[in-house]
Image (cartoon, each protein chain N blue to C red):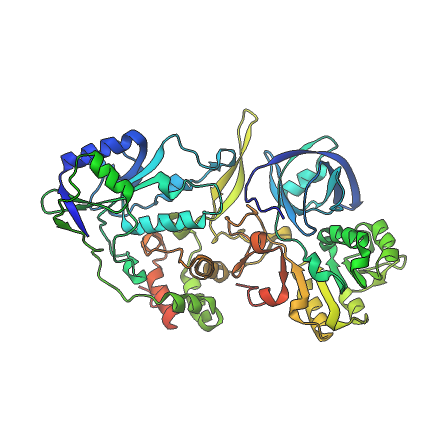
Length: 268
Length: 322
């Protein structure tokens, strides 16, 4: 884990760009970055601004890394307009990342809502690589409509490599290859062994309590559920206080929190 | 603690010698307004020292700092000459909070020459038990005729010796803080009372209803250091990334994408201010991010009294608005 708490920027150049969903681009950046799945970086574009993104490529990839950008602000809109060979400033990675060692020899339930799939993608790559270290791996990915599905080809390819991949779209059309509805409905009908399962979750703030309820109903305990939080981050190193959740700072103590540690703090 | 009696001539000489190796900042009176700024000569420093509206943080943790120029590397070391005791404590706390980063100079690179303070009706440092003068290298106190000077560190001793003062000749007594002592807070109890928001929800709501959410308190507080990264773009095409002061009272402070605000109400933002100062900081480093300097009370356009609010929360009663 990178423990240097600094604000030093490094310059990288973009070598690839692909639109994976309307308004969402996967940009490929030249260079190697040492990171734990779930960690994030701060990307700055001079004259425009800075924003936080989770790295979403395979952590073993040495030549490049990838970021998934949805345009929803100054910086992300500008990032979506960048072309190959354009330069970006980057600092990080920051944060703790997913607790990979906790998952060893256990069943893993991955719950992703929309862009929440992005921070889980490097973890899925790593788990597929070390498949022998994990028991069953269930992936539930929920999207608004079938058009909003991210990384469709990869999700299809993971169906062979993971125990079960459920792609749900809330407002699906008939042609859709996944299931219609919410991931909580798909999760309810899935049998899991509450004693040896760990659940990892990333998605919109509103999704987490519903998923938690389903998991807790299935007799899982709060210390078996991990959530990756999204907050506004300005510094990424624990100075600016924008990302506080109760006594924790998402950038320094998170972004991944265990439910039993965080549940009393949410809303403070 | 005993000190050496001295006079303004001798102190001017000490000041001149310090200014050779340090950039000296202190409380001066400019156009009838108090300002914490660069000091040229000893005579400019106001003693006893009242508090300035904006504290020392504008020097160490300046607004609009260029990130490329951080960590702060001044050509000369800093000397704070003419600073009240509450600000000295605040400085120590700020340095401790920033100890993990390379942004601020180390304590040994800052010379603190504190001066006797002039409390006003808003001060409440004694409520946190800060009734003794502490953490100074040198301390200057006004006497009936002339001044007395005290050394609190090796650096202080060295400076006094270099200026020919006889350290063994001690004849004056160090005064405490000349402030009516108020009831002292129980740190643990206060922190727990603030952490338990539900119990005092009505009180918080009452305070928030009177608060404009302007953030004046955060701007003047020596221990409010929230920042925002902004770009300073110039017409010549250059751009630099700056750390700007931010206020947790601003509406977009905890906004995430799609304008989803995690602290939509003023009461949430107000509570977060107290939570950071008295719960998060206390759990983390065993200190409060408040020394009772009273600047926030003086600056508040809604006349909220933070001292009374803390008392009300600790004792779980309603706040009486003045």
